[in-house]
Length: 346
Image (cartoon, rainbow, N blue to C red; front, side):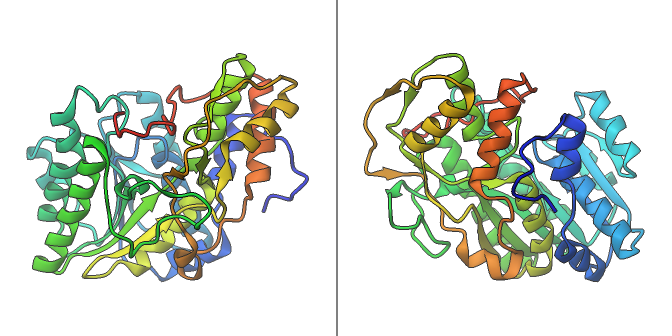
């Protein structure tokens, strides 16, 4: 495991090795899990390291299960990389009903497809990806066990300082993206209630690594000497390696009716304080604009920790890694989180 004084991740190869490194608990969970694994939407930000962690955990547990990743694979290099890790790949458009029949029969599914960025102006496609596709998956695999990603955006903004929204709190999605994600949850609930499909719904908020995350957004702005708006003044952060581990462990807890988990870091982080810390590490002065609103998009992840594990990488470690990576000109995914958005328009 990473030690607290390990302040540098050398390169993308090192980063992806860490993000896909299974914990002993993940190895044990995958050792208990029976049957093959299908990963839908494997080519996104999270899928490649999640798939690799599953494969590494299987190897450590002495398992030789079939792991199959499905996506359009617009980047053929990613498909080659996944196959080099021992992950089978299938290229298809999951919005097309026809390819679903040819997908292999499996008892375990990681459901990752989602559309957030560019959803404004493409509302129909957003609803198709975030809701209709869930219907196709549940119709094709009614007897499967799903760990399915949702988002903390299904909650309303919540007052800062109260620990964030809990899984049992009333939902209040703002904007078409968030509403379409709630529709996805409702459809998983419907198929779970009517066909007994076992589901773990994972409300993720916000996964971080060195190429993506709120701290990456802040570091990029500060390095470019751009102002940082603190109106959305607070956020959650969880290291993607930790959320990957929690996701794989969630398969054991899929249930009918669905079990809901918040995947979030334990702290409410201040945009102002994180920006100031990043500025010191980047050697840049920080221009802050706006004033903190009394509420923010915040999730409380503590209920998940006894079953899925607590995050091992604290925010301070993420901040040090991200600052060092940014100074060195490390690669990013080029996809800002838009965490400061308060009207739900992404």
